[in-house]
Amino acid sequence: MPDRESPLGGATTETAAGGPTEERIHRIRQRLERLIGVAATEGNAVRPLRNGDEIFAAMLDAVAGARHTVDMMTFVYWRADIARRFAEALSDRARAGVRVRLLLDGFGSRLIERDLRDLLDLLDLRDLLDRMSQAEVEVAWFRKPLYLSPLKQNHRCHRKVLVVDEQTAFTGGAGIAEEWCGDARNPHEWRDTHVEAQGPAVDGIAAAFAQNWAECHTELFDERDRFVSHRPSGNATVQVVRGSAGFGWQDMQTLMRVILESAEERIRLATAYFAPDDYFIDLLCATARRGVDVEILLPGPHTDKRVCQLAGQHRYEALTACGVRIHQYQPTMMHAKVITMDGVVSLIVSTNFNRRSLDHDEEIMLAVMDTEFTASLDAHYDEDLKVSELILPDRWKRRSLLQRARETAVLPLRRYL
Image 1 (cartoon, rainbow, N blue to C red):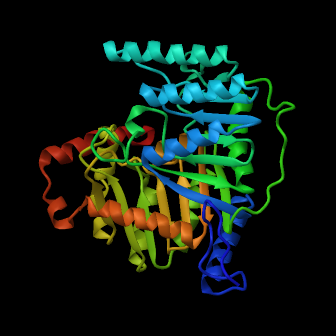
Image 2 (cartoon, rainbow, N blue to C red):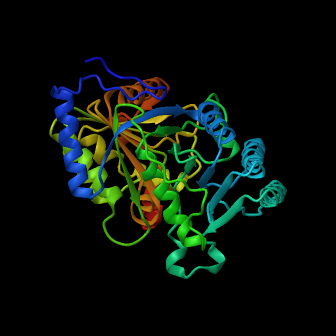
């Protein structure tokens, strides 16, 4: 039986009749469903979007075609022309009678007025919000710091979600700001990955929005929510996992643990902020020691959080000693959050591999069990490695005393990074 295809992709290389690949996918699916308690869905079409030129074009096209509802939330505050383009697109749909809801994190979307540029950005953001409000876009804020108890200050909504007409959804790592524009051609254009999804997995992504909207707004749904049924759009099996701010072990951690412990051949991890705890360092090392090829792709000279980078670099020596290969991306900030396993499973996430994402923030993860989709992400990874530098263990051991002192100095802050 030939593979089915869809506009977004999602065919697997094995037929529905079975085979080694399908058996592996079935086994991973059973583990994830039983250990996390969230059912995966079949019949999804998923398409990877690389960098702002692809990500924003697809999102804006989807918004422009909205006929019923648009739900959007983001963490990073809005700035520059791309912010205006989204504000105009959302306002246009609201004026046309579409119900448009926008949820902004009260911390991530703030502006710190340090200089004239920040002041101008703040005035620009307020102007955009005023315009959207006038167009009847419903805008809500998730946990504004001014009104929070000390315990809630540290728990943020880091999810990036766009759902259009309950049929098409987007999620991943990109915020709505100028640094995500372009195609990673220079240090001002960040490298990132998003995903477009159609099919039953859209409901799981929409639930991530609804969960946070319910905390911020009295009205959870209205007559314009159609609660549609989804027809098969592709062949990908997708599990949507939500991480919620709180204490103790989270589903995000379970998902990553299952993927690492299930790997037989290769783990590829790309993340913007790498500062895991001892448990995950040990787990990465154990994965490598049993013969799995473990690669980690991290920011290099261009990073917006040097403190977090130093915390991660403190772990390089232990990881490389176990056989883990670490690469630092050179052209610009590496902001993608992607994991692939054995060519059959991919994680597209808002989650970073650090304590903040895993312990404190509201996050969303898509576990995509599909070989074609995973192959696309692996191809992107291969291209990224061509412009990255491998950390050589012997050379790293000889790093300067100043570098070692900086790494040690940030260790007390690691749980907040």
